[in-house]
Length: 96
Image (cartoon, rainbow, N blue to C red; front, side, top):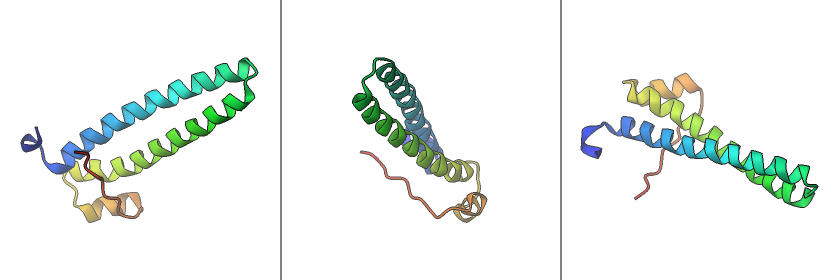
């Protein structure tokens, strides 16, 4: 598969897959946190809320990265992609 796509296109697809996982986790932790609050399990709810916030931060980072990578996948240069987002350069890590 790697031979069939440019690096930026493959990276965009991988980021999209990672964001789908993050969105699933956000929904799951949000639901369980709400249940814990309803049941009066405040300590558990607090820990679940912390995890939920971590998942949201991860999603935000993936969104920033996706903005750059998607621009590159669409043919923009790396510099143009950085200018479009106004953010520092973020390099994706490849997972073996």
